[in-house]
Length: 267
Image (tube, rainbow, N blue to C red; front, side, top):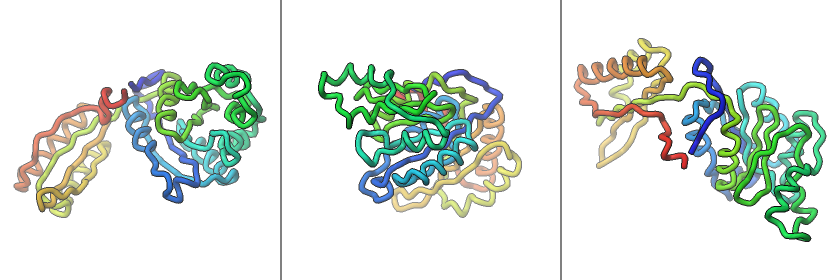
């Protein structure tokens, strides 16, 4: 279950995700982490604002890390912290912060609980290399940890391991107000409802409004989604949208209000 750390309802806390790996860019591996992280962060009150994917090239990783960590409250990276020669994320993070990096005895102690004497080889010890000053992010699946350096959280690319790392680091994160949403379903094409939606958006500039077409039973329809951290304002915008749709004969369908990612989805 997602649990954030110190909460500040008056602050918007933002984040970016940096996916690292040639295998993602080649299409050989399909990313399964971005959507999970997005829902998880939304659920605890952190707004994911940008996602980038970069190859296993140190300079490109360093460039992306420095750009994103200075722009957002948090940067989460996935991938590139395994035992092989092309796992260079830890070194790139150290370079981005201009910090030394070496085998960390905290990480070694954790890994000794999993590996028998003689099996904690030089290759495996690559996963114990942590930049100076970083906090350990625990990995209850395979023991090799991630780390958090200032506002950058470095996690594995394997989905299950990434998930337990995210669980471990979540209580340390500052969080803001959770995003609420309303979805109105209309059995009409997106182009029919776009003019009215634009008018409503102009009346409620602090409510994010989007339209998402669907095709069902050989008919086009549209889901209209309203998003806001202020429940009262969201209700007003929803009521205004509903009236507009009824006045134009679009027969909107009833909806529910809820956090975008219910607690039960994060277990």
